[in-house]
Image 1 (cartoon, rainbow, N blue to C red):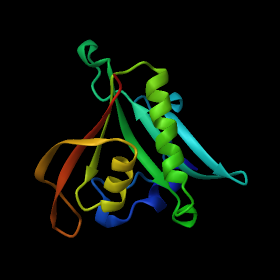
Image 2 (cartoon, one colour):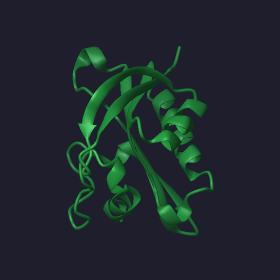
Image 3 (cartoon, one colour):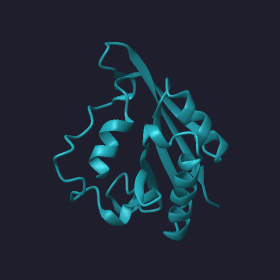
Image 4 (tube, rainbow, N blue to C red):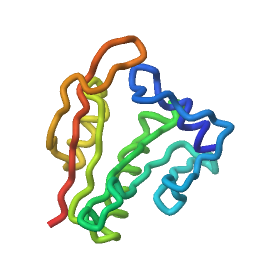
Length: 148
């Protein structure tokens, strides 16, 4: 179900990699159920967020990464993305980290605005880091929310 949501939520102009084949298992050694928050409306899954370790080294244990945010196209405009971001922030706080990082494409202005509204700040930008399926290049924007 989440793999199908993933596949339908990401338009090609935002693909860093094509969506996973929906017939493959969504959860893996690196994508664990305890790292995923799911949004439901009337018993239907309409979105999810994933918060997990970015680097698996002891010296980086104080950091989590907001690795995924997907909302079904049919459920957009209802504030679900904001609720998922708030849930991801609360999970990061619950886990006691100092920093919640994320990455977004520079062309994804909706996401960048949404993250900014939730207190994330741009930490850096990798210029022309990603080549999209249409051959164009976009920046990889690194953002973070700090817990002090």
